[in-house]
Image (cartoon, rainbow, N blue to C red; front, side, top):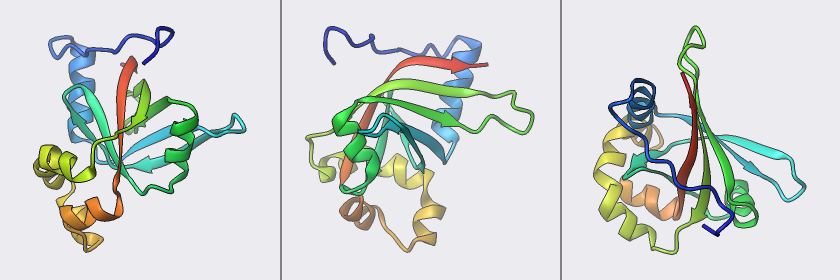
Length: 150
């Protein structure tokens, strides 16, 4: 982050709203990632993600629009579904970066919890963590800067 970027957000698990947001970030399987295209328009896509050490980790194919967008503008939003009555709003504003670390190193760190979270999805796609990491070999790290939740 540069001197003009907002400070990283540290969510407090003892705060009712922030604790609920953490629980949802740990359990929700699909989030909507919004990045900014070069022409200034937003681009939103559903993603798999892992809440890990206060960051969101997203595995992506290297040629995906979200990767191109983040390389040009690090500002992103992650939206979770708001629940049946719209009473569980969770939106994280953050700064994304494409990790320079090889995907294999990330799989050593996140493979077990990521695999546990997405066991069914990986099976449905006939993927293992290793084949997932080979195809989705670009790691996006999102540092939250603001939480909008209730």
